Length: 325
Image (cartoon, rainbow, N blue to C red; front, side, top):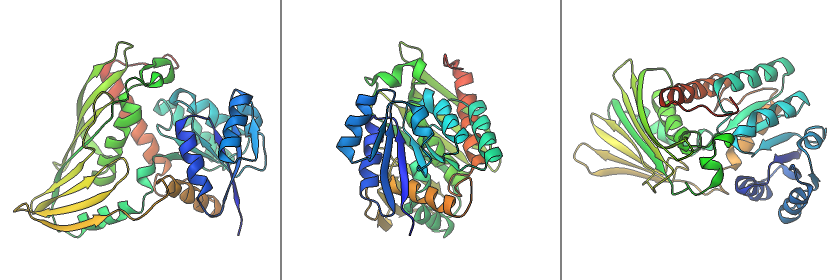
């Protein structure tokens, strides 16, 4: 069995979480880490057991022993880092949001197709096995015809510098709003008819709280809220004419409760054990690479572009343009 050499571009908190995940996975090797600062790279490698450390992204991307690069840099750096890797023949798993905008996403995926190099987005909820159980319950008809869903995700994270910095493509939408949008698109699809929204702004001009409603051709509605100011209950609720489903934590599905139209809980499932939840996106990437594919079925390229276009449309409505655009 081949052992896959995994590299990480970036040394922040999310990179550390992925490093912890990789150390506890089968079939993967903590191979290399890249940073723009060699001391940070060496410190990260020593702390997390990586074989190699590089003081530039260019050195990392040129290492032919790498099978997959996980890109864990700020949003504003995803495009340049991924492009560097792809043009050097490295498969990439890019942390959400995939890029800053749809134009960048389209360009990256075009290069991926031309060079036949695997690329996907690390929107981890798309890859979780528990998602299959959610879909199974909906398709069973136990709550009847779903007509509305609500989802919210909020954390007290506005003191984190990168989240309020326009130069790093900060704001609630690309960091937490992307999860509620993905939840809606997973359950109801991305082919909505209309979208209405509003947001509040930080002093630096990025969005800090978002409220989004998506209306579908068949009358379904998705009501979505996200915030980087306050702690939310993180629930996703799918409403049908015979009952409803409550999903605890749309950012890492923890449990599913099904209620009938008399508000009695009739079904309950708990999430199976996991390392961190990041392992599923890595295993899915490896499976796709082994099968000679350049995308994952859980998050196909056309879906990546659709989500980026939705966020572009929202930011246009809100008047938010990042300096890197």
